[in-house]
Image 1 (cartoon, rainbow, N blue to C red):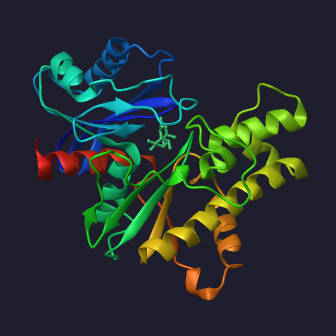
Image 2 (tube, rainbow, N blue to C red; image 1 turned 120 degrees about the vertical axis):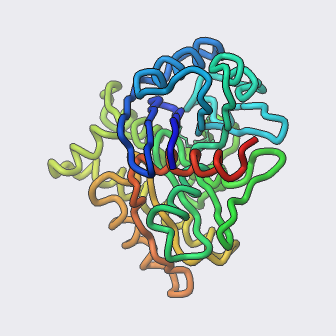
Length: 295
Ligand code: BMX
């Protein structure tokens, strides 16, 4: 794998330069809080240039949100990304970069990356679940990424949980994303403590410092994610689940999810692996997708 890949998430954008399957340069920047497509793409191009992308060279772009078969990009959860509704991301990026730009949902890209180059290698059928700003997913069945014309495939964060108490920015009530994501952890912690500056990272720090309220909030998130994993297994019959994302890879979180999944009947207890490529899964998957599909 050689080329430039970009991961466009709800909180940060990241770019990496890969050569022969190794990352040789990387850079990150905060996601702009604007719905203006041109500004967003300018920020991506600036970041790509800092890792060594040269004008005219193809780009693999993994992005939060829904991408339909016509190449239109929309935020589903408008709380994780300033309203983007039906923007022609691929076409606009191709114009700005003056090159081929292959776009793919971020979690779908990570699923492919982990399935082919990471923790999913020994298995045929896996789901990748990212617990980050939102909760996203990608499904690889018998080695093939599940994609759909409406771009909804893999959006596991918009399934619901019995622990749901609110709606997320998708408008749907009781979603896994509303209950267990990084945004949800921060919102619950803020409501509980009255400290409106708290981030999900702070909640993990407070948990490690022994604050019981912080540990309760993180445990509640892990319980919902474990319930999601059992549901995915019941629907898809998976060999394993690969867990990623800033929250998913936070020390101790996977162990908590495993502990809650162990409370389910044995049939639903599938292996939970940490994303072996860490936060780089999307780079690998998006580049692989670009090389294989090449459109
Ligand atoms: C949301 C959804 C998914 C995305 C997931 C993780 C939006 C804007 N995004 O479920 O498309 O894969 O979040 O994204 O509706 P992240 O931004 O948390 O990395």
